[in-house]
Amino acid sequence: MNISFIVVAIYVAILFCISFYARKKASSGAEGYILAGRGLNTTLITVTMVGLAIGGSSTIGVAEQAYKVGLSAGWYTVAWGVGSILMGLIGAKKYRQLNVSTVPEMFERFYDTKGRIVCVIGQIVIQLMITSLQYIAGGAILSSLLPAVFTLKTGMITTAVVFIGITFIGGMWSTGLCNLFNVPLKYMGVIVVTVLAVAFSGGIHNMALKVPNAATYFHPVNGLGLPTIIVWFIVMITECFSLQGVVQVSFCAKDADAARKGYIIGGLLMIPIGFFAAMLGMVARVSYPGVSATMALPMVITSLNPLLAGITLAALWAADISTACNMLLGSATLFSQDIYKRFVNENIGEKELMKITKFFVVILGVVTFFIAIQAKGILSLLMMALSLTTAFSIVFIFTTFVPSICRKNSAFNTAVAGIIVLVVWQLVPAVRILPHVIYAEWIVCLITFLITPLFDRKTINAVEGIEVALSEN
Image (cartoon, rainbow, N blue to C red; front, side, top):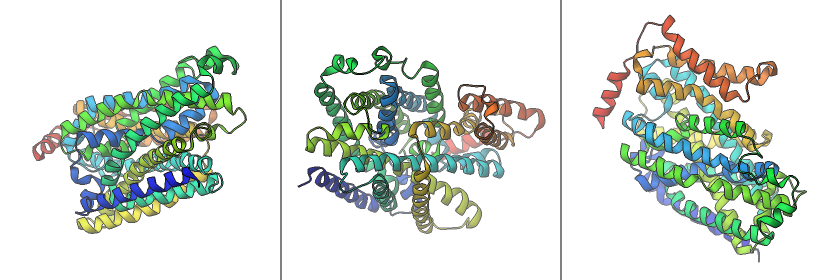
């Protein structure tokens, strides 16, 4: 009897049961499906944010990095947490008060249609990349948990089927309610397994004796290096202010206060978990020096008690699915709201729009799977994709706090500049004079936004628009 397989099967059954329950709450129409009827309380906002952040990149990805560089890889979730906290303190309340469904919708409300179009393109590229990376982590978990049943590829396929199914059935309600179950279990599993794995490896001192350059490997900063850690903070703070999958959580809150508190509490909960994942990756380096870095965390966990291993890996797999569900739904929302409803059928009803969104969930789920087959290196690809959110964050910040310098073409110009920077960075290595593309993004996008008023005298009605949004709430 394969205990781990039974645990996974039960886990999947529970997730689908929750999703079918969520389906009833999401059946009212498109807003009920993609925004949970704007009815999520602080607790659901909190677990949704934690579920979004602590997925494949924050567990398998961090362990993969820690296998190579040591403890400092844990700063990834600290950066995520700080980004979430700042979003809660500065942006979440304002986004919720705008009463929009997508970031591109905000662009068109205050700027113009072409600004919305370029924002949609950029957001979709980012979110499809993030979603695809979750397949890699999910496949790694299943193939190591049940090697007699899954290869990496079939594990990725199974992951795709489950998270597409959960998203299709219950939308944002599925994500929120499933995370009420996922988050406590995954935290408990990771913490318990970390303690046991380190103990079975003979403790920290014994581990230090088995790795070269232990002083650097166990140092909280030196293994990865301060410049890389700073890049992580800049990238994660930037994406928390403008990535559709992250911002969409604030749109789902029952009110601005619930949005603010949910992001702050969620951010605080995110901070420590990365160092536990990093420590597990370090245990893998000591115990299994010859395995693939991507398989590091699952290999350590499966060496422990079968029941505990099954529960922990199932929880990590479900956490991976939580991230993917949110990102997939965000991408489908962009297609249905900002492309189909805006340019194909403006008069579509709520029920029909929900069906269209579900259609895009399936199509985009398949597309991201094929992207995942080509992807390598979870965290490096993720950092590159997220750097594109710089333009959107700059537009949001100036629109909300300094609307007087915003012009009708500011959003379009800044977004196009951000895309050009990323493309040039990839195709022309000679321009890479800065440590990371995120620095180039901030410099070029900020300059573009600030010089636009020199050529464009047409102001936006941001103040009036925000006042209208506030009055509607």
